[in-house]
Length: 204
Image (tube, rainbow, N blue to C red):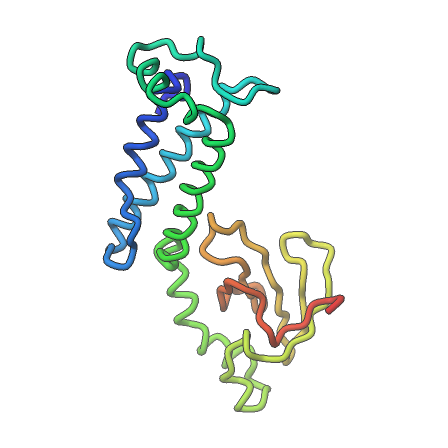
């Protein structure tokens, strides 16, 4: 996509890309989900390029920005679609659909996700071999753990559990497949979309 294209043509591109992404995700296989995600990302990028053409302090793309006959025709058909408020709302709507697809893709967004999760039980048995049997086989997110704060913004919480160091990493969601990752002795053993109720953070 060329961000210097006429804003009318860019809006037409955004609309076309959005139409390529079905709203109903339940019947889509992983390949079609990826196609839908990529189409929506391109639509968002086109809207960003249009928004960048709105000068500071103004509320719409100036008419002189429409240099092509096609672009001018699209603008004249509905000038309100080139207002900042409309473009921003449309961008937020499409971006939320991107996030929904990324959440649905889950493991597909990170090929190692499934392997790490599948290896969870075995790694925990080894890292917690001295723990009582009932706790050694309990998923980390279900164990009662009190974390302390660290000086590392990327890994802000840590705890010692049964002789192993637990570290919580904050991910760049939705670019990464989860909000948090739990590392046990520097090995990722569980991916989390929310902070577990059984875990206690400083100040809670």
